[in-house]
Every structure is written in structure tokens, then in C-alpha cells.
Length: 307
Image 1 (cartoon, helix red, strand yellow):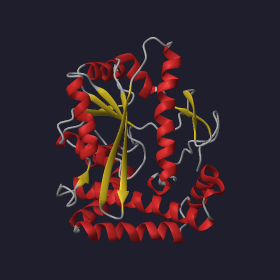
Image 2 (spheres, one colour):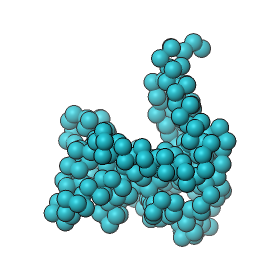
Image 3 (tube, rainbow, N blue to C red):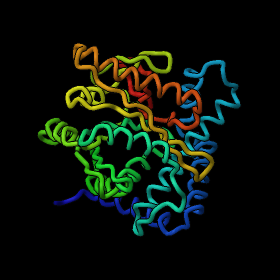
Image 4 (cartoon, rainbow, N blue to C red):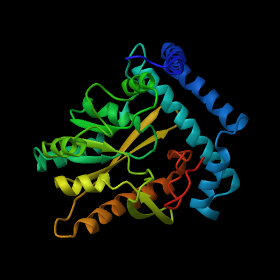
């Protein structure tokens, strides 16, 4: 396969930057990420105006201008830390993080479910909180048979490298747009596997109209649709970062489908239940959530992408 010169240049630049970070000790890598985030936030002001406006839109007068700015900073800093940790774990010298992920309570809830429902799969709704990538890293280590659906980057070299960085070898990747994708997803779920999916993304097509952040959002239907079709529950898996290096996973649910309800009504009910709980979790600690997403979740449908 021949690659365009632009794709090769982008790939080499990415590998060089990631290679540098991967050679650093963990806390030094985080310090470098902190400096980059501070430059982006205070120097270049990367998407800062949009983030501040979004936080004010959602939280209203419950927070001061200083608190809004602090939430926006922590959100961007956490994203920079996430990227550094992704490279640290999946770079040229793959390593485990030298810190523990506090997920015992989540594992206890999960194991209660698997003991009561042997051979039954489920869906992990993993929102953009804390270092959400760690959910995929931790799952195989906890003997959770997990898979996920991934999008494609325009640059195939960058796409392959990022997938290697982001996902543990024990997590199966199904690329969006591949033939028989729906059939493969449902077969996996019915065979007792667990799908990790992001619930807090606005769909470009007509999806599920759910109340969230005080407005109506147009979500992808896949999370609840898969649960309904495979007759398996949804769990909300919320990652949180405390300070620089402490990670906690909180697991909520299960949210079960109701076959007695009409299909569309049940999909809406499941989606609403998950998003109501996520709304409350974000309001409890708004700096955990990523407020800089290009597609603002509260943009109306149809509506322009947030930039």
C-alpha cells in the first residue's frame, strides 16, 4: 500500500513526539503534559472561549467566573495527562502505570452481575470523564472479555498507531463501516462479551432525543439499541482523576432493557436513565468531564458543529 507524503510526515512527527514522551519517567511525562496544557489554555487559548461558555450554559449561576475558569483548566489539563499516559503505556516501551486504579467497588458490582448471570454479556457506557481510556486498559487485566467500535482517521498510518496506543491487546477492535458490523456486535454480546461505548456524543443523524444538561440532545442510539436487541444490560462506567495520579472507576447499574415496552420507547428509556445519572455525576465534579469536544452535545439537530 502506498502512502501520501503528507501522511508519512504526520506519522513520523507523531512517532517522534510520542517517542520522546515514552522515554520519560511517569511524573516527568505528566509535568511536560501540564506545561503543554498551560500553554494551550493561557497562551494560545485553544477552544477556551467555547469551553467557558459551555460550562456557564450548563452550570449557570451556581458557579463563579473563577470557578468556571478552574473547571475549564482542569478539564484541559486532564486531557493532556490522558494523552501522556496513553503514550507512556503504549509507546515504544509499553509499560503499566506506576499507580493503581481504584476499581475494587466497581469490580465487586461487576462480579455480582456475572455470578448471577453466567455467560451473559453487557455494555459499558464510558463517558469522557477522568482518563476514560484506562477502562479499556484495565478490562483485560480483570478478565473482562471486552470489545469496542472504533472510527477511522484519514491518515491510515496515524490510525493504526493510535489504535495501538489506545487499546490493550486483549480488547477486540471493530472498525465502524466494516461489513456485517451489527451482526458481529450482536453475536459478541450474545456470546457473553462486553462492549465499551461512549454515550456522550452528539449524533450527526437523527438519533435518540434525550434530556441532558437542561436541554435536549441528539444521541447515537447504539448503546440502548444493542442492549435491547441482545437483551443485555447497560452499565455506566465513570472514570475519575483525583490530583495528578489517582484514578478511580465507579460502576453504576445494571440498567436492564424491558421487552414488554415498544422498541423505540425502551431505547429512549434506557438512554435517558444512563444520561440522567451521568448528568448528576458531571455536576457533582464538572472538572472531570471534557468540555472541549468539537461537537458540542447541546447543539440542536440539525445544527452546525461546534468549532
